[in-house]
Length: 160
Image (cartoon, rainbow, N blue to C red; front, side, top):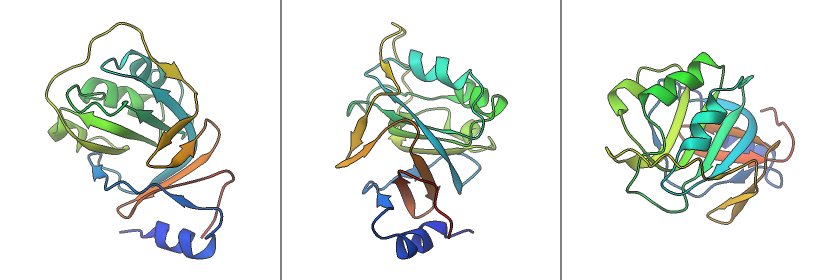
């Protein structure tokens, strides 16, 4: 296990912003980091699917599901696409599905919970917009660090 976040928070108390959400881990990778990309959506994961189908170059996608817990924003096929395209991780303020398969994928996946129901496909949502989760604002280009202790974001890269 790699407890990176406590060290980052100790060394950078003014820069490291902890996102106060009790995330659940679903991917096979528990510790991940990278530059942030964002998606805001509601009951439609079209933008999530499209973005994870592009080269990730070790980035982390943060998804604001607008508070909805009744449609899964990520499943096995999109998760595999993230792996195939080199994404370091996915953090979803919403649910996922196909969790047995997600647990085998070599990518970090954090989400709020599960829902077996797929989303509608209307090509709606916003990419690389500012999102705020529990008082912490994230924008594309920020840095995200995640481990079993949670999620921390900051404006610039940090080293423990």
